[in-house]
Image (cartoon, rainbow, N blue to C red; front, side, top):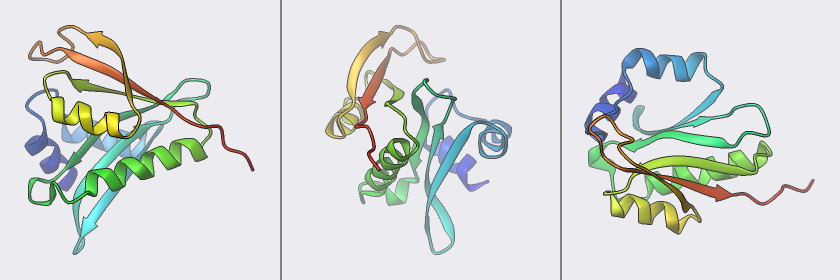
Length: 140
């Protein structure tokens, strides 16, 4: 339930329903990482992990409002990148609203590049951007 609350507060449209969140957590080829504070979930990221050679995909990442601007999203993104590389993915994809320039800039700081414009991608017809980060091959 706490993921659903964070989801509802974080996104203006295209929100994941509680049943869709349960699907991602329990049945999908996905990994959900959470950040907690005093036993409460305060942030999450859903990373889709399809069969290789497809790329990993950040499906959703959100931080509860009182905990924003405390580097929690940065921590989750760092862990997601590390985990994707560990799982031998070549890249990570995500989509973001083009008008959210701060969010686009956040991803760019982590090496994500805009690779495609997605006109009317979101439910409310907002334009999206597909971004990709290429990962270094792991050597063991």
